[in-house]
Length: 64
Image 1 (cartoon, rainbow, N blue to C red):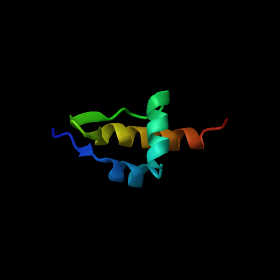
Image 2: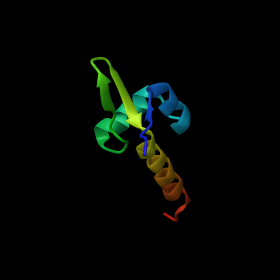
Image 3: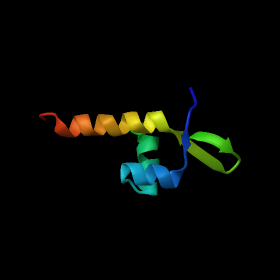
Image 4: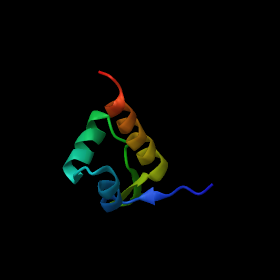
């Protein structure tokens, strides 16, 4: 099974979050951490982003 790595523009598009919000959530532990792709490049594992999105949908539709 191949793992797809998403770069920041794609993560922003899929989540609707800004760059600063993504990194704030990463530092708070509420968003998947990026992986290093090189000295100055990071990416996110597509499956982890998809799970985060599904969890957000589930949370937003439950009675609070």
